[in-house]
Image (cartoon, rainbow, N blue to C red; front, side, top):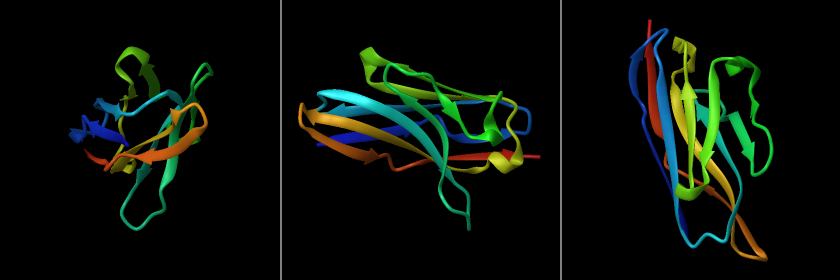
Length: 120
């Protein structure tokens, strides 16, 4: 019913920047929250940034001051601006959304992921 599509990943050098995008489409009544997770090879998936609708963003300690999450409500799109990238930021980044497709029908949805590789 809902589809999340990430884009913007790629290969950058340490110190560089990338902006990830995640567009939600389908049957959407209300987006309650949109988040970014990442998973590096051999590691567990971790929450990177969280944005609850109407609230303030939250960030993992490892990215505070470097990453910024934002949302374009008109486009149902969430962004992750990543600055001062480090090799340890290398991971597959996943968009996550808490969405009501109906007033009383809420679900959690995931994108397929976009690869971010930071070289030294």
